[in-house]
Amino acid sequence: MPELPEVEITRLGFADRIAGARIQAARVGKPLRWPLGIEPAALVGQQVLGVRRRGKYLLVDLQEGLLLMHLGMSGSLRFAQDMGAPGGHDHFDLVTDRGTLRLNDPRRFGAAVFVDGERDPRAVKLLGSLGVEPLDEAAFRADVFHAALQRRQSPIKQVLLAGDVVVGVGNIYASEALFAAGIRPTLAAARISRPRATKLHAAVRATLARAVERGGSTLRNFSNIDGQNGHFQLEAKVYARAGLACTVCATPIRKILQGQRSTFYCPNCQK
DNA sequence: AAAAGCCCCTGGATGC
DNA sequence: TGCATCCAGGGGCTTT
Image (tube, rainbow, N blue to C red; front, side, top):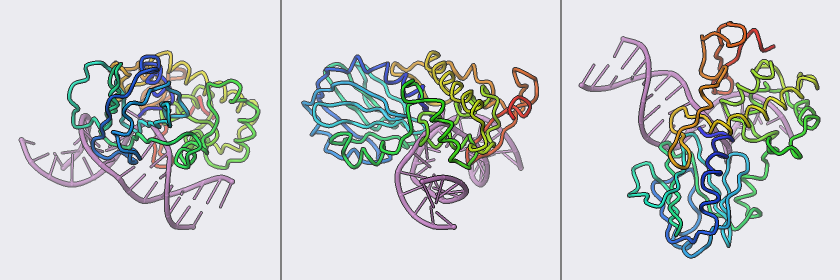
């Protein structure tokens, strides 16, 4: 579900509201991808310092340690004062004096994991091999991006998705960014010229930034911290548009499978 | 090191 | 209506 824009929209929605809050209780529901790694009761009394994002992970900084949260394919977070009783898909609650942070995740590919810090082995394993942040201008450089692509033989779509070159680009935005750059998703990354890599670099940034502006995409489960849907899906040029006319040239959009994931592209606009 | 497959899990849409 | 099949914003882990 949630790619970088949706995770960032989620973060923006509650980071300021939860910063400074005191944890009063925590509860876990059915098992998520990984166990919390600490007794929920042991979090009580801790203060929440703030919320950062790394790729598609949220890092909730506590006085001692931090909480890594991931939304998986179907997760979403809510933050509210009067949260009410947890439903069948509410699998983690962090109750604070400012409100309750609740993770709802039907498929349970998401997670909430407590670690001592970013140097905790568990954190290193999850965050240590992530690529650069696409919206960080200092970190995401066109020339470095091109050089990284030169070392990869797999199709560019799968390199974008892998997250070890650049993070946060999921299945929707990979297709959208490649369309914006006019690059065929099946093209081997190493065969992309410097000018085209530069164009893709810009397209990745622009696509993600625009999606954040529009509140992310809502296909099925995603809603922001207050339960509202995103709107970027309405602007998708190729994703989930198989058979429909390309908005630029009217050629039917094609759908293919790459690494068990759907890819959408325009066979005329993307070479 | 890189690439390719396999899973984890639930629910909605589609087809017979 | 009932049931089987397919598909879905991810990504860690194992095997080549």
